[in-house]
Image 1 (cartoon, rainbow, N blue to C red):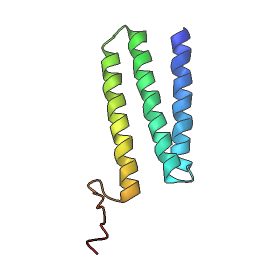
Image 2: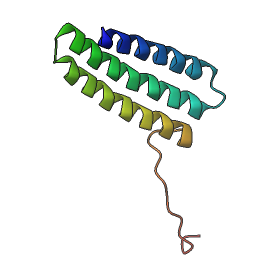
Image 3: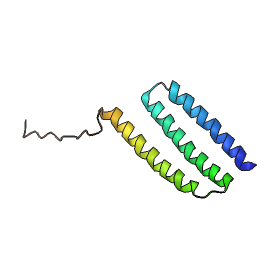
Image 4: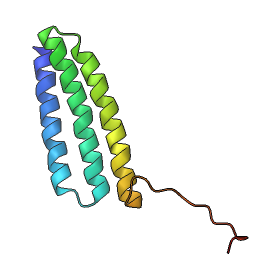
Length: 96
């Protein structure tokens, strides 16, 4: 019963994060909301694995957490530089 209530609370938090992702005033608010949605998805997968008695769901949630983290970093890098393969060139005053 308690884990069912926890799953319902996680679903409510996911709905609120999705609203923020759709209505966010800046792109960084939206990225943060999507990251939060991914984190809540990891929690939901773990709780559902506990409720159904399948501990292998914890492995799936850990993989999803890693994908969520790498995806968030890639999206932020894309919005910062406009390209994922951007290399910073250190300008030397001797070259100019």
